Image (cartoon, rainbow, N blue to C red; front, side, top):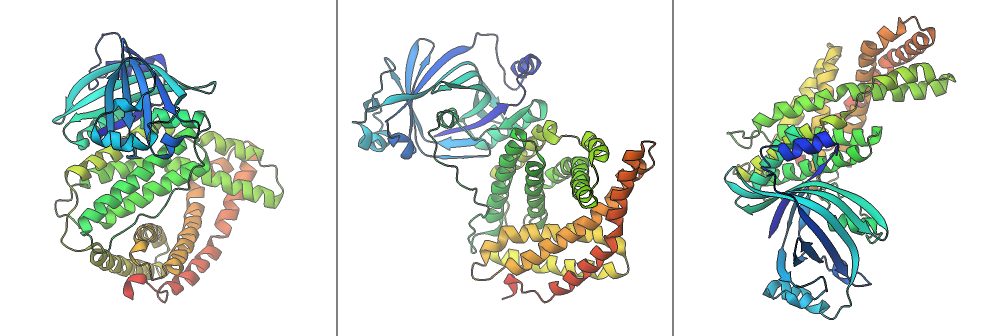
Length: 488
């Protein structure tokens, strides 16, 4: 069984490459790198691919090695799959060389296939073997290219393969590297990237946003899996944002992190030792560091909308706001380092409690709901209480979205829709308060165009705040009478 963490190099400048080679954890020596040239084979109708099998023959300096990889799993950059390697004489395809009984059984239906090269990889590899946290890890630093149907795509990656020990050590080493270097987990193998380059992949399926839950499962074991699944989703969204750093992908990344943080908070009473406490503050700090980008993007969105309503040329304020937006992409490795550390911790020390997932969740949801109601009653006399209430609404909603599969016969949609509405209204009120901090200095600028537009936007946002608070109160009153699935 192959277990490896694949990390893509985000910045392939000479300085970065030099720092990666020199990193002490990788222990790269001055020995010249290996020159590798691999050929991947399949039939004309992609029979091996459809069977979730990968077959390659790779030249490693002066030797040839045939490799078969079977179906496994790849999530968050951690690849786990069966693998067989056999020395061969040439790059002539021959499936009969795999004599292992399991491999031979997998290949039995395909022995007579006419195989052809579907793609190639050429790269140099710096390799070392290190010990990290008690486990032996093979380090491979690869640089080269994938070739498929006349197309080329670069290979720039670090692979950490578990040779002996615990997969948690691979994740811990990956976290340590991401803290120092511009690396990001890659859940795509070289073969997968080559198939995509060659146009041989089927249409990508929509990601399933619901994790199957077993109601009678131990609550600690279940939440350990929930958290691992959620952090893998964050890594997925981190890569999407890095590949396409637009407003929508940034928003999706923030939602994923918010949902994960809500689950962390919800399940912290599961284990009296609270092994995840050390990671909550760094994760919170990373999230809050992104607020400036989120706030300016929100203001830019509001101004685009308002300028169209008022039939104003938006350029003056638009340019200023756009120029103030920082980018979170440079901080992504720090986020990944936190996530990989949490993942490793959950492997080494899963959460534990004697209660079942359903019993724990229903009791905890009931407690959180009561706290939510108490916070809502404060709002009438303390308008400033809306901000902490908004956070409670968010956390409650995200947890309920995660746990909704526990009640397949009950409809959570009405409650979730109402919570989403309250969250949205409270968010707009918060944005009006936030706008003053950013727009008041602009409204007093000497540049009349910027000052006028900043004043117009600020006035619009503040002017509708009273209406929004009335609207919030109206929907809040519905919350107490809305059915809750755990009460049935």
